[in-house]
Amino acid sequence: MIYAPLIPLQFDNTYGYQNVTDVKQLVKFHLTNLLLTNPGERITMPDYGVGIQQFLFENAGSGVMGLIESRVATQIATYLNYLSPGNIQVIDNGDHSIGLQIEYHVDSIDLNDVLVVEVDLNSGNITTDSIGVNY
Image (tube, rainbow, N blue to C red; front, side, top):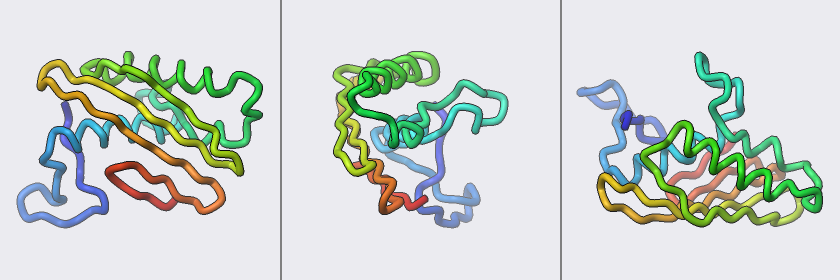
Protein backbone atom coordinates (compact mmCIF):
# COMPACT_ATOMS: atom_id res chain seq x y z
CA MET A 1 0.00 0.00 0.00
CA ILE A 2 1.37 3.43 -0.96
CA TYR A 3 1.44 6.15 1.67
CA ALA A 4 -0.47 9.34 1.02
CA PRO A 5 -0.23 12.94 2.24
CA LEU A 6 -2.53 14.06 5.01
CA ILE A 7 -5.35 16.27 3.72
CA PRO A 8 -5.37 19.24 4.13
CA LEU A 9 -1.68 19.36 3.26
CA GLN A 10 0.66 20.15 6.13
CA PHE A 11 4.42 20.57 5.86
CA ASP A 12 6.72 18.10 7.59
CA ASN A 13 10.51 18.18 7.97
CA THR A 14 10.81 14.44 7.33
CA TYR A 15 8.82 13.80 4.13
CA GLY A 16 8.01 17.31 2.90
CA TYR A 17 4.34 16.78 3.73
CA GLN A 18 2.80 14.94 6.64
CA ASN A 19 1.69 11.45 5.63
CA VAL A 20 -1.32 9.52 6.80
CA THR A 21 0.04 7.21 9.49
CA ASP A 22 -3.08 5.26 10.46
CA VAL A 23 -3.69 2.26 8.15
CA LYS A 24 -7.48 2.51 8.51
CA GLN A 25 -7.38 6.17 7.45
CA LEU A 26 -4.97 5.34 4.61
CA VAL A 27 -7.32 2.71 3.18
CA LYS A 28 -10.17 5.24 3.27
CA PHE A 29 -7.94 7.79 1.54
CA HIS A 30 -7.17 5.40 -1.33
CA LEU A 31 -10.81 4.33 -1.66
CA THR A 32 -12.03 7.94 -1.64
CA ASN A 33 -9.39 8.85 -4.24
CA LEU A 34 -10.59 5.99 -6.47
CA LEU A 35 -14.19 7.21 -6.22
CA LEU A 36 -13.43 10.86 -6.95
CA THR A 37 -10.87 10.45 -9.75
CA ASN A 38 -12.32 10.71 -13.26
CA PRO A 39 -11.21 8.09 -15.78
CA GLY A 40 -8.41 9.60 -17.88
CA GLU A 41 -7.35 11.97 -15.12
CA ARG A 42 -4.49 9.86 -13.76
CA ILE A 43 -1.39 9.78 -15.95
CA THR A 44 -0.35 6.29 -17.17
CA MET A 45 -3.59 4.79 -15.79
CA PRO A 46 -6.34 6.03 -18.14
CA ASP A 47 -8.99 3.62 -16.81
CA TYR A 48 -8.37 4.43 -13.12
CA GLY A 49 -11.24 6.01 -11.24
CA VAL A 50 -15.00 5.86 -10.82
CA GLY A 51 -15.60 9.56 -11.55
CA ILE A 52 -18.61 9.74 -9.28
CA GLN A 53 -19.24 13.42 -10.10
CA GLN A 54 -20.07 12.41 -13.69
CA PHE A 55 -23.22 10.65 -12.50
CA LEU A 56 -24.78 13.61 -10.66
CA PHE A 57 -26.98 14.71 -13.57
CA GLU A 58 -28.05 11.24 -14.71
CA ASN A 59 -31.67 10.16 -14.43
CA ALA A 60 -31.86 8.01 -11.30
CA GLY A 61 -34.54 5.78 -12.83
CA SER A 62 -32.38 4.70 -15.76
CA GLY A 63 -30.40 2.06 -13.84
CA VAL A 64 -27.64 4.50 -13.00
CA MET A 65 -27.45 3.42 -9.35
CA GLY A 66 -26.71 -0.18 -10.41
CA LEU A 67 -24.14 1.09 -12.91
CA ILE A 68 -22.36 3.07 -10.17
CA GLU A 69 -22.36 0.06 -7.82
CA SER A 70 -20.94 -2.13 -10.58
CA ARG A 71 -18.28 0.44 -11.53
CA VAL A 72 -17.20 0.83 -7.89
CA ALA A 73 -16.88 -2.95 -7.45
CA THR A 74 -14.92 -3.31 -10.71
CA GLN A 75 -12.56 -0.46 -9.89
CA ILE A 76 -11.88 -1.82 -6.39
CA ALA A 77 -11.13 -5.27 -7.82
CA THR A 78 -8.78 -3.79 -10.41
CA TYR A 79 -6.91 -1.08 -8.49
CA LEU A 80 -7.41 -1.79 -4.77
CA ASN A 81 -7.29 -5.56 -4.83
CA TYR A 82 -6.22 -5.71 -1.17
CA LEU A 83 -9.83 -4.73 -0.33
CA SER A 84 -12.73 -7.14 -0.33
CA PRO A 85 -15.85 -5.04 -0.88
CA GLY A 86 -19.06 -6.08 0.84
CA ASN A 87 -22.30 -4.19 0.43
CA ILE A 88 -22.04 -1.18 -1.91
CA GLN A 89 -25.03 1.12 -1.57
CA VAL A 90 -25.66 4.17 -3.76
CA ILE A 91 -28.31 6.63 -2.62
CA ASP A 92 -29.83 9.31 -4.83
CA ASN A 93 -30.38 12.17 -2.42
CA GLY A 94 -32.02 14.24 -5.15
CA ASP A 95 -31.13 17.79 -6.05
CA HIS A 96 -27.78 16.76 -7.63
CA SER A 97 -26.46 14.87 -4.61
CA ILE A 98 -25.30 11.25 -4.38
CA GLY A 99 -24.44 9.27 -1.26
CA LEU A 100 -22.34 6.11 -1.22
CA GLN A 101 -21.84 3.60 1.56
CA ILE A 102 -19.18 0.98 0.94
CA GLU A 103 -18.52 -1.85 3.38
CA TYR A 104 -15.13 -3.51 2.96
CA HIS A 105 -12.64 -5.89 4.55
CA VAL A 106 -8.84 -5.88 4.42
CA ASP A 107 -7.66 -9.45 5.00
CA SER A 108 -4.00 -8.68 5.69
CA ILE A 109 -4.82 -6.57 8.77
CA ASP A 110 -8.23 -8.10 9.61
CA LEU A 111 -10.00 -4.75 9.18
CA ASN A 112 -13.74 -4.39 8.62
CA ASP A 113 -14.89 -0.85 7.94
CA VAL A 114 -17.39 1.32 6.11
CA LEU A 115 -16.72 4.39 3.96
CA VAL A 116 -19.51 6.94 3.63
CA VAL A 117 -19.19 9.55 0.86
CA GLU A 118 -21.56 12.40 0.02
CA VAL A 119 -21.11 14.32 -3.25
CA ASP A 120 -23.16 17.52 -3.54
CA LEU A 121 -22.78 19.50 -6.77
CA ASN A 122 -24.91 22.41 -5.51
CA SER A 123 -22.55 23.34 -2.70
CA GLY A 124 -19.39 21.98 -4.31
CA ASN A 125 -18.75 19.80 -1.25
CA ILE A 126 -17.53 16.24 -1.11
CA THR A 127 -17.60 14.82 2.39
CA THR A 128 -16.56 11.48 3.74
CA ASP A 129 -16.40 10.16 7.23
CA SER A 130 -12.68 11.03 7.14
CA ILE A 131 -12.21 14.19 4.99
CA GLY A 132 -14.10 17.13 3.56
CA VAL A 133 -13.13 18.74 0.26
CA ASN A 134 -14.40 21.69 -1.74
CA TYR A 135 -13.98 21.49 -5.49
